[in-house]
Length: 305
Image (cartoon, rainbow, N blue to C red; front, side):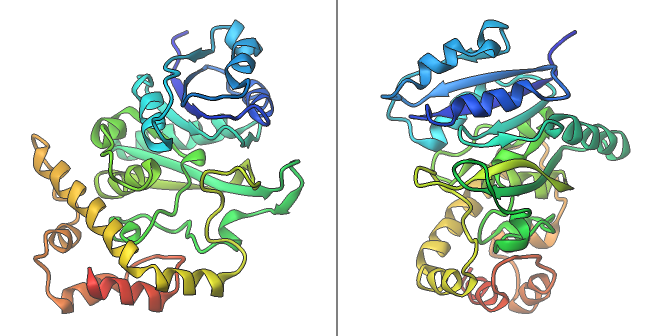
């Protein structure tokens, strides 16, 4: 049987949790997958553990590039470049997968492909846990300033709402977002934005990974717990939010212009990023935005976009 799910795993000094992650993937109820690993020059024994794991010996885990100094974004891009199957998942080195993660996401994916036939992204909730997998909260989206209701491109103008580690997308979506620009803040934000404009996004309302929080996270569950403090921090960070917005919208326009037959799926959003929208139209679009961030903060940032 041909492999139909690729898993992109980017590693860096991940020896503390990598075996737990790989063991959880090995226990998947759907096992027609292959893991493509790129390592960013780990100085611990991450590579040794990868080569010793049963998945490696079974040929279901392949270690590719091990050149360091890439950074998280470029390392994930390297891993993604090896994923050429019909369906692709992203994977963080410190997470723990629920046994039915692949089966659940793939079932929704195939149902929606049959129903709409467009590029599709499916994602799930996350159980937030501590370093030893003890539950902190059953639902990431209930305690974060992120929204699981985001479906449209304007929902992703300020920030991303879909952690890459719970994404599954199909080949047709990868063909649209790849290559990921080097200067966008994170790969999953770019993927979500392209999915929202050119395809469709669907949500599995159950946690399919244990999202580990510890001192070594590259990003971690940003936006959790102290909402007021986060809102104040974001207000102070408005210049940086605007800079990130300018980068990602500029790259979106470039990608749109470079496509052979670009689809004008959302005319209002396209007019917004092209700077061809009135403030009245902008306000009308803003009222429809689904965002976990403070509504006042969203209005403030949108005023300057």
